[in-house]
Image (cartoon, rainbow, N blue to C red; front, top):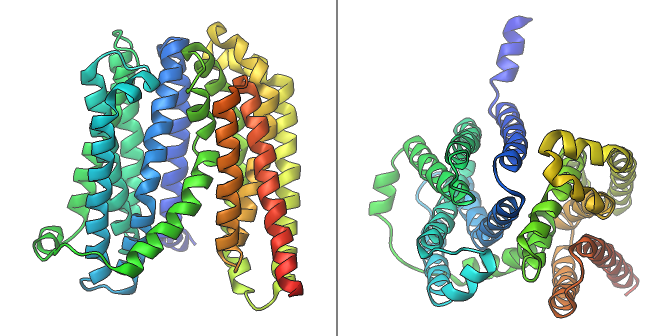
Length: 410
């Protein structure tokens, strides 16, 4: 019995899931520790710069997927992999040029006062992109244990350096240094886990394939919009005109509200996606699976949100301290946003494995884009941004369902 249990726990996918869960827990406590170490203003800057790095990484996610798929389908050298690397190089050159020529605007947006901090941030963006690309390589080779271990290493090193430099008064710069060093350690670790990496690099030839470019464009369209909902696009919008203090207070409320998304919606979405794909010939069955998942997600996340609304103020004071008491004013809109986000993510899984994916991507991009422009023009209180994003997500799903119905009737 014990031998069976050990054998079960040694399975790569299960071990990877456990390692990622541990890493997520470390990240959650990191956010609390940073809130204790840094001032409210610096915490707002930290939250925004982390959101910026994550969302800039979306430009590499389609390339990561192409690399992962190509390696998984062909264990030998694949032309698609080399094309993806070529595209990766071009994307990073473009990012670098934008960051160089737009340095003044970006420094002002990110509240960076020193050029050296901005240069370090730019370096962090590039290293994060390399890290994401290597993730795709290991996923394609199904090296899940090194991948999960690396995730833990990243958060531990980031916490250690960020906390260490933070307590001696380095402010948000401490987090940039911590993240950059963490990325370098992880890149080294992942490269050491890939056998024959140097040999493959020697055989590399620059080239771009039309099919690879087309796949990149479609995947980017979808991920770019969805990422703004999942990875704190509300912070990026609010930071255009809100103060650092407002950003710091809001960040605390939205981070705690999103716990329900990670604990409830994300696991449910992971479980239903293969079930929906398996019933690709039975549209009615797919609809029932989607409806059941949406109802369960709504009920469970509603319970969490009610508890959060009732006890959130006390929880914030206990975890973050009295400096963040005003974060309680953002609890209700953030709690509502988390519920809609969870249900949106469930529908996203349905769209990905059905014929709805392209139309859903276009509709979501258009509606989300219009809302983003509206926020920039009218500059609402940051507490209203999650409410607006919730309405936009509901509208995107509703219009996608209408499109699906009309298409069926034709």
